[in-house]
Image (cartoon, rainbow, N blue to C red; front, side, top):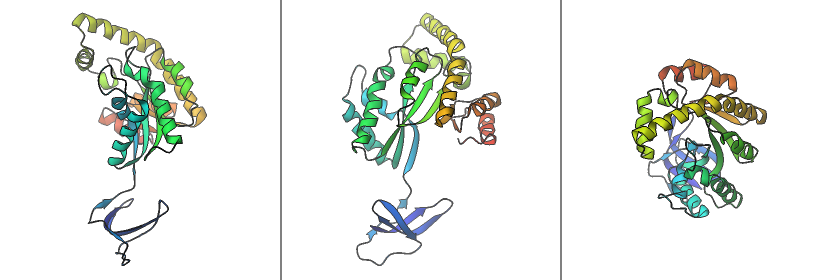
Amino acid sequence: MIINNVKLVLDDDVVHGSLEVQHGRILAFAESQSRLPQALDGEGGWLLPGLIELHTDNLDKFFTPRPKVDWPAHSAMSSHDAMMVASGITTVLDAVAIGDVRDGGDRLENLEKMVNAVEETQKRGLNRAEHRLHLRCELPHHTTLPLFEKLIDRESVSMVSLMDHSPGQRQYADRSKYRDYYQGKYHLTHDEMDRFEAEQMALAATWSQPNRQTIAAMCRARRIALASHDDATEAHVAESSQLGSVIAEFPTTLAAAQASRQHGCTS
């Protein structure tokens, strides 16, 4: 297949030309137009390599499109895959939640079904994009490490991120923002929110650091890409680098973003 009249996006340039593809691979490109009659006209459009999505929880909404609605797994996966390809994404790291800030959520109930759906549809060649797993670990939770240990050796796992959404730090350094978000999300009264906030702080004090250290060590031993999440200070970044993080997901301050770059982390 030859495509004429396209803007080819290269590593460091954009050129107007043509592209030849054989057996699903790029054979050649040129800054000129093919004269072969079977060449397609790209109508001056942009032609990019397939995008790689490292962190999407888009699959969640298809498994639970409405509260208390449990959608069939393969149908949910098919709809999610179609949306990814329509967006120009050809490699997807489906981010599944390991642990949660609250027991009994849909994410934990759907975890095994989502993992199985990703792996089964990929093995059977049903997906148009390539789908892999990203284990997004909510550190301040007693179930996080046992769930992680069950999944870490799955062949489809390509990335792990370390998240801590407890109050008073990182994304929620401003605790009023934390209260606004979770009180609205869970429809809590002021007293219920006070208890919820205290519980989350206690969980973080007990589980965040042990889980962070253990999960990072397991990733290093298996050479699985590790990502930090919501680093806000230079100290956060230094710790992430020491643990072996190679990706900085969503640094929440300019100082953290600059420090991540200095430590060689992609962000």
